[in-house]
Image 1 (tube, rainbow, N blue to C red):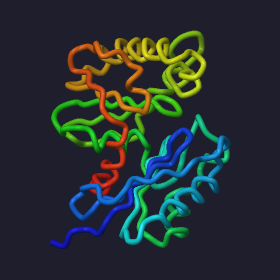
Image 2: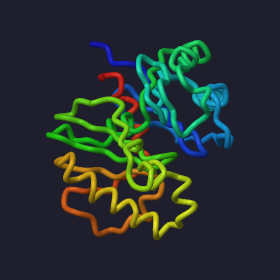
Image 3: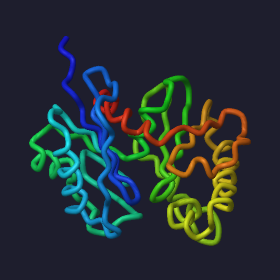
Length: 232
């Protein structure tokens, strides 16, 4: 059976779009690239940014994109932390036309989780970026579009408001790290995962003393998950 060609894996973040090329077996190859994103992020800005970063690579057969929103059949059903214009935007199709490649788009936390989990039992991934992303896996199979970040938390706020990027800037690094621990304490007895993984660019702000079964992981794993996305 022939192996797929190289995959360009892209993550849409808070202020930056990151990309990494992986080879036919899913191993990273070449340098990871970054493209800055504007503060206001309508659909055309993301399509332009993906096209810009794609030009930095010579050869790839397909593209995987992790996006901070609910994705169904390649369409953005909801992106609560971004521009209202994203609702019902066919992102996968728009990128296929622009890049002239096969494209698969998934929730950013789902794609990141695919690069993290071991494939044993119940595994939960929480990502901290624009908001709080979440991904649930059972024996390695993804339960797509879990949105724990939208769950009400306190005083009419949700987890996105409590530990998202705006909260990090407003509360400061130390207080934000303690907030993440409070979220962990609430999530664990509800979902009872074998492992709970915490990922995001601010993981160094989270205290090292974590409950049993909770691990901090590097945010770059989401790019590796783009390769595995084609098997789901």
